[in-house]
Amino acid sequence: MKIQSTNQTFKSGLTPKILKAERGLNTNAIQYYLFQNKKIFSDFENNKPNALAVLLGITVLDSFKTKYNGFNLFCPSIKTYEQKELITDKNLHNFCIQEKQFVLKNHQPYEKGSIFYEKVNSLEEMNSIIETDARKGKRSSGHFLAETIHEMLHAIYLEYISKINPKLLPELQKKTFNEKENTIIKNTLGSYASENKNQYHEVFAEAFTQVICNSLDNCILVKNPKEELRKYPQNFLNIIKKVLHPDIN
Image 1 (tube, rainbow, N blue to C red):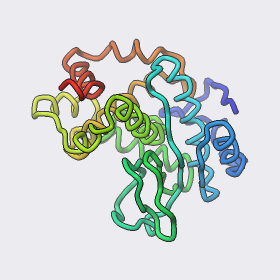
Image 2 (cartoon, one colour; image 1 turned 135 degrees about the vertical axis):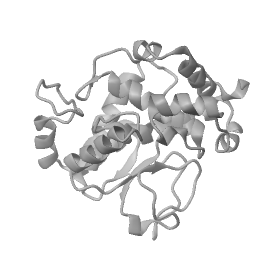
Image 3 (cartoon, rainbow, N blue to C red; image 1 turned 180 degrees about the horizontal axis):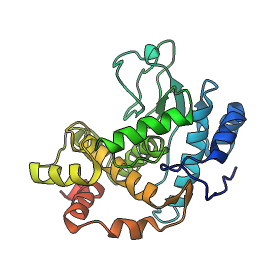
């Protein structure tokens, strides 16, 4: 399943061609594709925008991992949900779980690394929400795939840290940056990544979301993400080194 690039774009990478694909989408076909080719069990509840965003996001990350061999997406399942289905925190909006747990009413526990995307009415609605957050200085990118990729990067970081030392995961949930570093993070990535909850995870996800989205032409990776990362100032790159090597900090 390949999405070809087009020169006709909206500000955030969403194109008329992608909107047309959304309208004619068969979500069951995407679920079948993800299971057969990626070993990911997915249930989009016939939500076309989430299904297409996930397919595009995974396609982008397939290109990305050719540059970063250690960043492999390990995600046992992807689920579209509505807030009324959540067992605990009713305010969660798109998330990846760090351990096996019950998440949704009338469902079995989900495995570590499972991703949940809240039901959305259209890609245009998704685009509007993300662009607004980026414009307000909350998030690192206004690309319409930013949040989709962000959650996949959480799963990548879980797998990455698990290979370094799985005992680090509980510690990383509480590990934060100092005031000076948080100012750099906020100025570079937005306010969301500067919050103290799961901060190492969030900085990784927001930073590489920005790097990836800055490397895209619509939904095609056209720039080398490593070259994009080198453009950041050294004080920010020092923070990224801490995130990638928490075992020596």
